[in-house]
Every structure is written in C-alpha cells, then in structure tokens.
Length: 545
Image: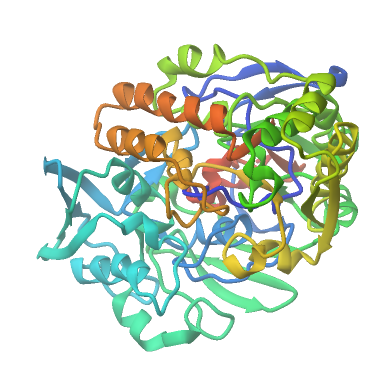
C-alpha cells in the first residue's frame, strides 16, 4: 500500500500513519497522548541556498533500485529522486502532470497520455513513447515478477499511438490505474537501457537510467548509495539545490538517532519513535511531522485457523488497548485507528473526510465482551501465531501488546520472531506466510485516494495476503473503481470501508503522522509520505545563507 497499492510492511522505525489532514497544505495542530503536542505541515522551511552535498539516513539498505520491484520505503525513498512517473504526487497530496504533460479519457475504457517533449534520460538520450510502453509493459512480464503486476489486470493493450503519445486500452473502467501512474507502476525508464542491463538492472552492478533531478552515481553495497545532480533536468522548478546526496543505512534505531544527534546524518524520514523526545529537545535539529496515508494494522494471513471465525477477529480487536499502544509504539504521537485505511488516505476528496471518516466510531475496548466472544466461538486456548521481528522496535511493541491482549481473552498468541529479511519476504512471497496467522503491517496508499488501499482486499489481489474473499466487497470495489468523480468515488469507497470494518480481514491498530528529522545545516524537505515518489531531495539546501 502501498505502495498503495499495498498493505505494505511496517518496515519502518516510524511514528506511523496520520491523524493529519494537511491535504490543503495547511498546518494542523494535534495533541497526542502524554502531552506530546505536534503540528503537521507538508513541507519544511525552504532552503536558503545550495549545499555541496548532504547525507541522508535510511533505516535499511534498499533491496533493489529496480522500479518494477520497488515496493517498500528504502528503495522508493532513493528512486523518488532518480526516476519519475507519468503523473506526480505533490507534498500536499495532490496528483498533477509529470512526464505526461496531460492525459485524456475519451471513453471509460481508454486512457491517452501526451508526453513532454525534450525530456532526457541521464545518459542524454531523449524519452519517447517507446520507452513508456516498454516501462509499463515490464510490470506485466511474469519473468520480472513485479509486485505491481495486478495494477494492470484490466489492461488489454499499451500502445504507442504517436511519437509522444501512449494509449492504454482497458477491459473495464479502472480509475486507480490512472492514479497509480503517479507511483511505481507509472515509472519510466529507457527501453534501450533496460534491454542492455538485463537481469542486472537495478542492482549494484546494473544501475538505472531515468529522468529525475538526480542520477545514480554509485552503490557501495552494505555501506551507501550516492546520487549526483542531473544538470540537464527538464523541470527547472525542481532543479536540485545540492550537488550530491549520500544515503547511509542504519538498521539499529538507537544508532540511527545518534547519527542524527552527532551530525553524521543531516536528516532522514521515519524517525525512530523511541527517540522522538530526545531528537525534539536535543538542539541538534528539528523533528517535523507531515501528511501520511498509512496506518498500523494487523493483517490476517490464514482464514482457515482460529481467525477464520469473525467472532475471534472481533474479539482480538476489542481486546487491544490502542491508546497505550500509541504511547509505547509511537512515542505518544498518534491516535487509535478507526479503519484499515488511515484518515490521511482520504486526501483526494478532503471535503468528504469529515462525513466519511471522522464520523466513524472509536474502536471498542472491552476485554470482558471480547472474552465472551472467544468462548462463543469455541476458540478458548486456540493458538494464533503472530510474526515479529527486530526490523523495527514498533513491531515488537505491537506484537507484545497483541500477545497480552490475546491471553487476556483466552487466546494462545504465540510470537514467531524472524530476521528482518524474512519479515519483508512475507509481503512478497506467499510461501513465507506458511504457518502464520497474523502480521503487523504499515498499510499505506501511494496516492491520496483511499480506494487504492481497499483494492488490496479484492479477491486475488497481490496485496491480499490472507486470500480473503467476499463477493459483496468485490462488486462494491468495481462500482467505486468505475466512478471518475472523486466525490462520488469517495462515497462508494465508504461502502468498502464499512464492509472491511464489519468483516475485519484487517484489524486497525493506530495512526501517526509521517516524520522527518532535519539537522541544523539542511532544510527544504517535504515532510510527508509523498516523498516516496516526489523528488524530495531536489528541494533540500542550506538552512542559512
């Protein structure tokens, strides 16, 4: 969600998804548990001048820089500055033209994209319609194994219909396909470079060749990735303010916080929640909070075990002390989640958010009633296996809270610890889910449309990790995905939200804002989750003249 496409992993040391609205760009005050007041705004103060270079901290090394396989925060954080999409998500969660100057929908099953002229790849060659066709079709190649392949499920053909025009023909209306042209599915790479690189593409050996404000300079595996400024970048309004960017990989949350405090890292997204207080008061920089489309959820992986019974799913949800989870897992910066898709995911039609999300009831916390449901289901003493990992401290915190809640109501919740790599595999490899009942996820939208999140609960979708299937839900999704008007589509998406809350294939846990740390020498970064696709590094420069 992730890639919103997805219900992607909680592979983050972050104060999670948003109680923030900020879709209009306005700053929104919030007060969290424990008196941890905070504000959300889509951008940090603008840069006052250039920088020769700056260092950016990632919580993990990207497993790939292949856009078709980029399905998580680390690779997308780097690629956002190197590769671009046909459309663009802005820091205030709008969708605007990108490499496509415009698009038209001559009928409900046809999308026509007019490309910008004169756009150069990093090797100096010019982007054409052939590059667009090759880039999009790559997601549909089984040999590539793109997790974005299901985005193209309704595509009959992707055709070059002019030197700078590409037409997508659909088997049925698909609004989300167009919106996701602002995310990884819409990324454009040189067709010639793809053919030459072969299976080394996107690896430390094969590199990439896109159109963004930065080009990949080097990838020192296990240590760092360095980008250099693209002096020929087409969008002068986003010309890079810094000559180079160095990404370092620090998996340990405490060590990452120390890098911020010592100045060895000038900044980083997804600030370790356990260090929020220290970083906010340490005088070495600023922690800012921005718009988020994500929520921490529990995704059911096996509907053949105890969690196949709705009463058990409801009971586990009712036994969660979400307010204390927010305090422990998110540093008090957040709120209990009312639904699987976060409030911030409703940014495409913000005028609908109050009626369709804010009016939802707060999640029920009633241990006695939950225990009774478990007894009625005949599930007392049944084992539920929840996977956990050292990938992020928040995962362990939530896992321990779920285990304690389960035991209070008579469920035998067992924690299975796996390595970070194995945890990540759960979201891309069905075989990695064997023997598991639950996983903690960070379900986020790549676009500001909540329908994107709810598509991952359709029957057969790649992001439907537990293979949940509901005919009513599938029919409601098709109705929503055929509606071009954002307001009307939001109303239909609310039907999906209602079914998901009734059936609980995903159990909502909490939301928190996106976070970024900026040291004293750098500023200009967007603060929200749009950084996964917006060329955020281009706007970073010196904090002082």
